[in-house]
Image (cartoon, rainbow, N blue to C red; front, side, top):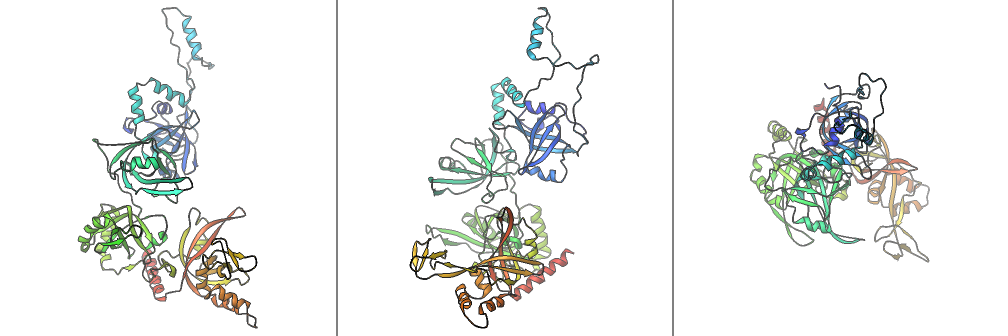
Length: 626
């Protein structure tokens, strides 16, 4: 195992900022110094004992750092890299795109020894270049002195500039043509060129905002390593590239910009997203060897799809086809166009089934192929599915969805082995079994992602980036009678109203006066289960199911006089009744302190038959895991 760095490793990197291929690189071993997490990537100083350069590991190497394979003061062998400029500075940034760890942390930082001549006792100060030239001119005309070269400190930018000046024009052109892997791109790079296959192309969309009207479309690009990035084009760029970009073709793309991806809208696993403008360049890689990128899946078990219901995040599944319907046509309301649709039922090792709707070309092409071989129970892997609450939980393909039949992958082989040995004879239950197709029942996904209250309250970070959704079974243990349980609302739009001058109520939303208003709940209550308790907020429809009457009816009970307080008695009757709750968890800031806010999104009564089936299934899972 290497215990030292390569001599002049940093100089080699600076003089060859864009190597053509990793196979041409000499051995480059550096020491990792000052390793730290910056944003979502790790930065460090790469050192060869003489020189240092600021460097960065891509995000896909973070697991190696967190596992301890790459350590501060450890040694790494750099197998591929890119040298980038730092904006507004004369420095360079080393992007390590491929490396391997050679040693764990050394005791000290490696520093190269300074060699001197044997007769020298005192180190002399290096002479400047102009002093050396002047001394050489004073010697005899026939004698040219070659003084011993001293190390003159130069910045990375100076070395690279000199290197490029000395290159022939053709070499400089080749340097700029070097293809960068997607994993090495970041917003601080200057010129780059990528070679990618267009693996998904969205439709051209129009928009209208305060700045005017425009058009936009998105594509997904995949390089040879399987890394993906989303690219967006607006207005003139959208018109320029929409016809040029053809699905499945390979392109050289340059002169684009990158920014941090919006977590709520990104469709691929990449920290950045790309924008192409009218000056960007896309050249088809025709008449040369191309590549077929491997489709990467992030499979979600069918019984866990409830987490994705009506969310922006898409899901990938793998399962055994149980049945396929004939193709049908659905008339789209916007333009009355007939859209082909075909449904198929898919099951997996969780013994749950889900209906997948294939739309457009997938319904006619892949759908027909599946229809013809449905009796053979083929395996399907589907990427990028929209999860909705139709029939409890259902899936739909999009324009970017990919369907593979009997794919050659470990997950498919494992699923086939399970189905042939056990699954074929097992009883399968729909993931939406016992759940109403209407989301207003509050029953959707109640049995698919059930958690205890302690799971929610014991994880303070839940809901930090985006709302988290869970189902839970709990009792209403306390409703405080003194709280403001409702507000006056407009009968038309349900927004809050204020008392108008004279009489009636003024609605700011409808811009009108009404003689009457309605009351709508904004109730806070405590719910409890065997693991703990939590305070939750419930709004009108959900609160009505908890209390058992409308806010107007409860207000009348509150105003009634008598020995028995009918208002408090009604609230008392609502406590210690079990319900199934669908809740969302978000983070709110109060007095500079983040707190969880749990909101009831749906309430449903206990279906004891379905609850018994759920508990029996949970007991079976516990036994199998032992």
